[in-house]
Image (cartoon, rainbow, N blue to C red; front, side):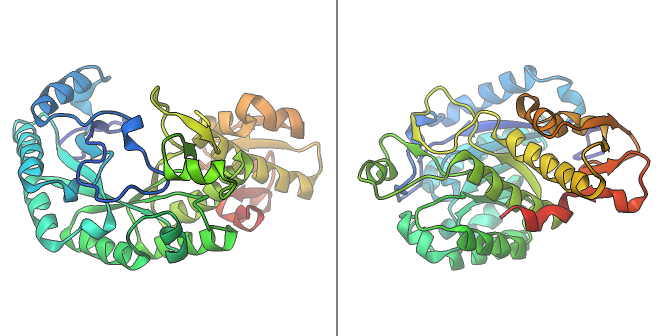
Length: 347
């Protein structure tokens, strides 16, 4: 049971309510939230939530959440934010949803605001940290420093709400060492969940202008996948749930350059299985037959089967094998490798 609802292995229903750029006093170098959607009017929230839930499979058996995304929820004009809160709270009291969550800037979090959100039924707050390197944050025009992320994270944890952290590999001024430090610092914050959004260049942004002038070079897809995989493993090993890797597909996106791929998260996981399989093959030879859990077969084979076609291994599956493991068929414990074993081979 979770939130009074039998989950039965089903993922929760998260209804996104986009409030693009409302409440955000800064225009970060990389940002143009207007490309994603227009802000939802508070009066439309109930209809959107009901329609979204009705379109989902077995909604009565799943936990249901309203999520205010796309802007800085805690920075919205108090009168407007209260309208959003009231309508969400009404849906909560009616049993339509079981909780509310939002995303915001780390420098717009206070104990007073968190107390109001907690009382209204908010269960989670995501902070757009993006980096924990002050030089990178400054180069990206974020308008806050790493200390704001640390302070806000502590306040969210103390409030009893779950903490989410968003990071963006490949921001201006970031190198591998800077990114590794960011991941180290995020792990210390002990977030409950995280999102990994590699930086892309969108038209109409300051980053686009910098890119046109030759002042910024985005990560290529391979490097973005590698940095994201490093963060994915470090964070999941620390008990953090990764909600998403890579920007979600959107018709309004005007991406000029950078590591955008509609299946970016799959690419990251497929690279993990590629590295694990390579390590086993180095140990046992090219004729190795590998075993994975049935639900991990697609990642083992790779995007468009590139892993199996390039490495030329045979495979089978075993329901008793834990998720995230690759094992040689008939092998002892030494013939098994898992995600934490490959961290040193990524960056």
